[in-house]
Image 1 (cartoon, rainbow, N blue to C red):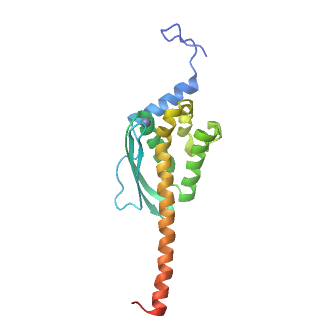
Image 2 (cartoon, rainbow, N blue to C red):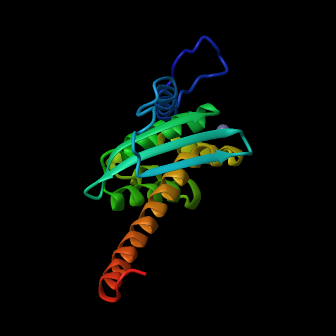
Image 3 (spheres, rainbow, N blue to C red):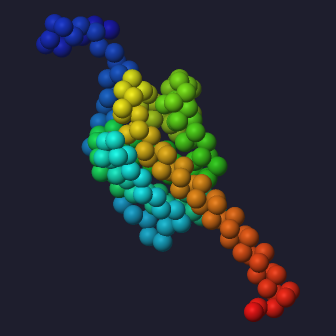
Length: 178
Ligand code: ZN
């Protein structure tokens, strides 16, 4: 579609790019799920030293789902928009779903999986596909997702330790506490 832009050099507007830019700017200007979760089960401090992006993620888990998820991100517009998009996508999901969504996003950014193949919860995340063309910014876009993955992995590890300590308690019951 051709559009007059008041600048003769711009004769074609790629509407998909324009829509994606608007989605990114909207998340940047109105970030979702900003704050801290009280008594969080998951806390992650993520940094991208290349750009100076800094993120704090906290989440509570109930019945295997991310009941609440909040973030504080300081940094460039890409890292902030991506954080908001991630928080919205993962909020309320089961831990397994959240992990899958992160993997699917990373596959788009790192393995060339087309944005159009992402599932509905990642509709807004498609807007970040263009960041792939700027390798130095990929870490900005990935920071929130890698931080979420770290949090999910640490939570799973902690949980398996708790079940191990339950086993130890049973042994204490058998042999008596020292
Ligand atoms: Zn950045």
